Image 1 (cartoon, rainbow over the protein chains, first blue to last red):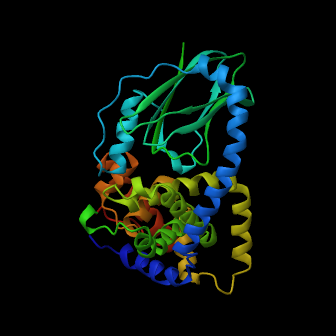
Image 2 (cartoon, rainbow over the protein chains, first blue to last red):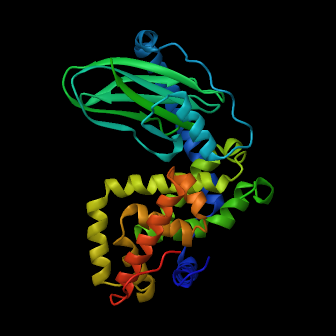
Image 3 (tube, each protein chain N blue to C red):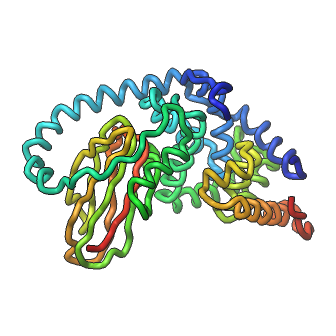
Length: 183
Length: 169
């Protein structure tokens, strides 16, 4: 229902839109192409290093896949996807789109043992790093699926501090859900 | 927005939505260049996964959500710098910058708490209904109504200091 603010905002929109300088869809295509090339070059080198250095660690840290959640329909709303991802990890404190650049952070986590549950939804893998005690402590790639997948990572904090999860810039998974639980 | 009404080609969605999304973020964050950068980045990310984003019943909602999250993330990281830049802009109005009325509204919006400001922008510039905002923000409809009411009152007080109270919609 229009009110006294409707014309104010319409005026703002009307005056601001001519000032907007869109880089253009062509520029977006070029950016994505450039990033793909750069990523494929970096990935080739990094993959060898990660395989060599991380294979043993990954084998010990990967938890079993949890029960799968019914698949979302091909055409769905974002809120549905977020909701489904949230249901993968009951009690998840962080649920968001992977592409949103969010870095889930748990501040002031006390010393002790923890389980970090990471759920993801989407047809592409989700590379992630778990950071605590001021450094990247775990690095893994969750093989997400449209039905949803959950991985558990258990670790000990030898002193209180911040725990955060960083997703790779190239991550193509759709939605994540995360929960940190003391064990 | 139902799927049947949505353009599913990336270029079409970009052409139809880039400016509107940019204005929404500009109204929220007060920085047009930053808003343009963030919306472009959101579209780039959408393009990377367009095969799945275009399957959503409202691909624009995906881009909007990512753009807002990116903007909040950037804003948190550069809060101090942006505050400084805003002060500079008030002292030195740019030739191509917004005019006084527009700055007044954007500045007035900046005084509102984030939830009220976001609700106002999504409602008046994003053309989202109260129910859609509630769904997006994962809160009750009544909460959004309260945000909008307080937002209108706060905005009225900023724009017209003698304005007593905004009646509930």
